[in-house]
Amino acid sequence: MYFFLLNLALLDLGSISTTVPKSMANSLWDTRAISYSGCAAQLFFFFFCATAEYSLLTIMSYDRYVAICKPLHYGTLLGSKACVHMAAAAWATGFLYALLHTANTFSLPLCKGNALDQFFCEIPQILKLSCSQSYSREAGLLVVSVCLGFGCFVFIVVSYVQILRAVLRIPSEQGRHKAFATCLPHLAVVSLFVSTGMFAHLKPPSISSPSLDLVVSVLYSVVPPTGEK
Image (cartoon, rainbow, N blue to C red; front, top):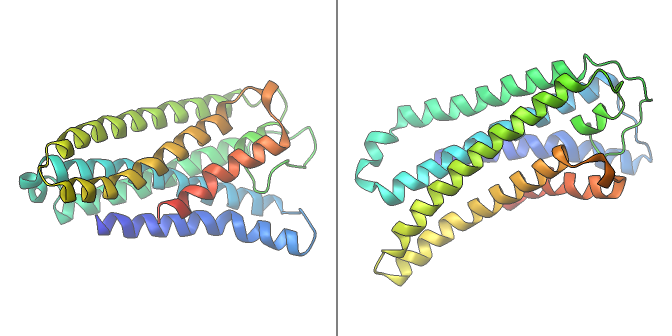
């Protein structure tokens, strides 16, 4: 668990460092400017950290399932080599997804100005600036990514249902409390991350507004990295 938490802490630090310092600097210097290459780099690193973090959260749900439901098999199922391989897979998934989305997004022609109604470079906001007939590929890729993310969320929920059943069979109240204290913060962060991320990327344009987009983006880009701690 501590090995995965170390990886998660690094990704959280990277995610926060990608968006918040630039936003704070713009506020202090009373500017909202960011270069084209800086915007591309910000989108890549944020998507890389967010995707790898979510993959790691999925792996951590399996780790806690094995630890609580199959403790005698933990050393076999989650040995040091298996943990390293799973963590490497999470980082590699984040890198590939970020590379794919960044290349797709910044290959689109921007024909509706260059001003984003957001405090960082976010894919839905960039798509609003592209020609309406040219963003279908990236929009479709976003929908596929959200569906895969929802599949991971279902896996996490199923894992925690099994964990809950096992915890309720623990005779000691102190033992049950310790198990719940370990699992509930993780589940709360995952729920917030998935629900706000899906809403930000799939909400219909009819209910979109700058203030709503800002609140939702803060909820899935800033709150989960701090909440997991």
